[in-house]
Picture: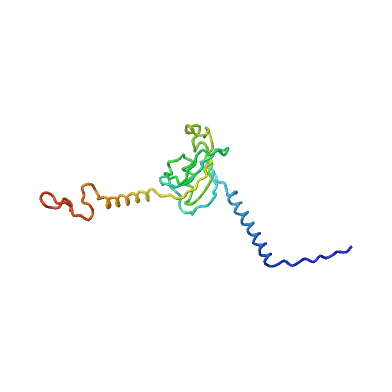
Length: 193
């Protein structure tokens, strides 16, 4: 038996480079898909389950008294969307317990999916005129755009009040900024000057 050798044509270097780039792109795409689909599913002590879809900036998490700016979509187990909102600002504690717990796990910029068991949602008493059945586990996809602490909020409110006082004439009965106080009947400045 004889073996016939078939000569192979050499492959151009540019073709090899393109082949390796294509393989690397496929591996990168597969890894990205695996991360988004198969990122770990975590369950908290309360029974809340969650999966990070896009990591945030890390760092701190909102507290119960903080104000958040979020996008969210709520679904039932059959995929029915029962609620959604974009750029919603609300105190963290202003939601159902499971949603509040979910927000306190997130960092700024994070997008995550949460499965909230009925006992952390509405239990057997869902809101009237809603599509939520009694005892339903709720699925939420949440994006945390921003949050501000209660202390930061109070500081901003104080700064706004100070600006309004300076621009709008200050305290009732006080002289407008830049003017001398009105003299009293005896010609002396008012008390406290």
